[in-house]
Image (cartoon, rainbow, N blue to C red; front, top):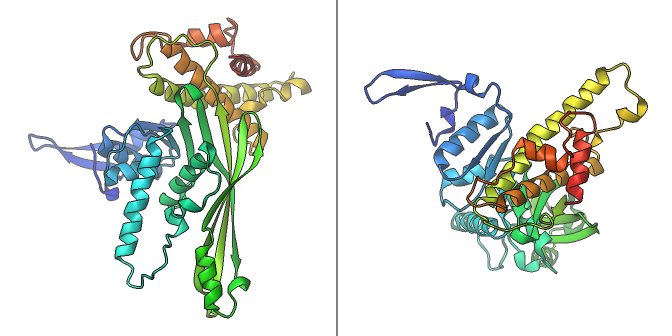
Amino acid sequence: SSSSSSSSSSSNLNNNTTDGTTFSYDYDGVWKNVHQLHSDTRHTEAAAFLARQANERNVPVSVDVERDRYSDEFDDLIDRASFVFTNENLMKEIIHRRVLSISASASANDDDSDDHDHVDANLGGAIEYIPSRDFYHDVVLLCYRLHTLANNKARELIVTRGELGAVHCKMEKSEIQYNTQMLKGNNEDDYSTLMKTPQLTIELVERHETWVRIVLQTTTTIDNYEGDGCRGILIETFKYMLCMVGPPKDINIVDTTGSGDAFVAGYLFSQIVLERMGRENEAQQERSSSKSESSSSSNLLFKTDDTSSSLVQEAILFRLRFAAWVAGKKIGGTGARQALPAWRDVICDLCGGETERGSNMMDIISNRLNNK
């Protein structure tokens, strides 16, 4: 069942069948044991309906954006997702379409439009002002625009790049700064000068082999700041972390059909199942009276509630590497499903044949993935 109205997302809904009888769905019962909702955009209205249901119950939503559906339901579905999977070029086109639509709507409703060529930074304007743009700058800009288009909802963007691997982008922190000193006295010259300066800048501030840190900053003007008749400026600073992996080594390419779906499945499996196993192992160790100090520090990778930057990086890189491994295995066979790895392949290839879920099992998988 699907609906475009958010009010339809109640706990129980009455529905009429073709013969006129009425029945109801117990949606709370359906969602009772749901850990995460994942969907592509093919059945857009149904997916958006379920995403609204998930948001109401604080169930994370992930979406594989395989193409633009050009509809409000499609945009709503993306805005409700915490995890967005897409390829290198598609999301640019989607965001560009939405930015142009919002900008056009804003211009049509602006009775006080002036002559300068200004587009508010929150709508994703001023692209031409960004110096030295490269792929990582583009990913950050996409993540920022997803963030603002969804009313500042926290987002994680996973971009696949084919033979170049994949990139994960996540906002680490943001801060807002107000400044009235630059425009004290309502000096029109100062105001005009600010309007001509870059509204949006992106700077790479830290680079490592498997991750980079980029800062995006927007500057906008504010009229009648705090009601004192002064104009001011609003400076918003966003810090992003990008983690990247290449494709697995020595891939035997037979058929790439379904490789994108395999990557997404591997990412979600590692995020939900393997990391849960790691947390369960840690909890079991904590309950054991014989737990030594050395073993208490094992499996730190899978304490995903820890906000330490290095631990977050390792967790994200683990997901990307496992996803790339799954996609690499699928590419080695024909068809979309024939060569997909099973749990026995994880045990054989990544655990050295060890079947016990010991405290070091996740560490073994992580170490093996690092070398593949």
